[in-house]
Length: 258
Image 1: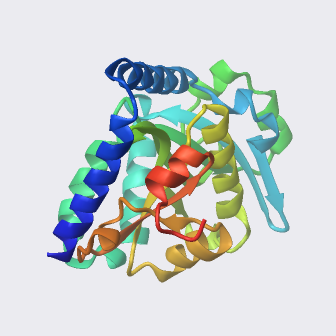
Image 2: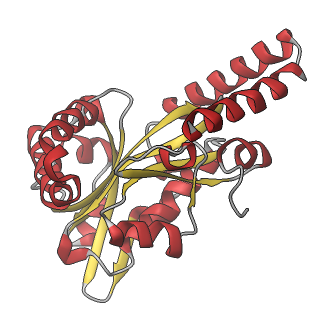
């Protein structure tokens, strides 16, 4: 009953906002959002805008970052993603993992999927000398170095708002706790803002307390009004977000401490 009331309240709020706009304005707004998404998707290499994020170095960790798309992943990279997901996520999902794993395998090769790959390499200077074409033709697990982490994200629309949705942020255990995760999320937020996304949205399993603490306390992400818990529903996950403008805060973070 409480969930129904919450859903009804959200729908009324949305209807009230829509009533203040004419049909022409609504259509123009939708067209503008679609154009923003289309422009964001067309940008294949995020590092052209943020070249300084090509590298991350801290103490005993030196890595090189590269970008990619879901429909052009090599077989070694696909296998790496599948293995790392299983190692990192199986415990959090519990008995739901077999079904969830199949979903993730389909998601990861979608043409809409965008990736940031993190390679640990012994010779950074040699890697820098490779042209973009050479990097794309190089084998994902050899010439570039050893993969140690990846981010899977997409540009999409939530509540009629353009957002960057982080599907996965996965790091090998041995490179965790070195600031790499935060570095990657800072890059993701910069990509989102550069692409005119109004927010970054992501899903976290409630059982994954380390991830929940990372996003909620270290990065200051808020529980979104789209999250099932905000509608009175009992699920194993929360939907978190960080908004960059008033509309996104009103539509995605309403009721949260802004």
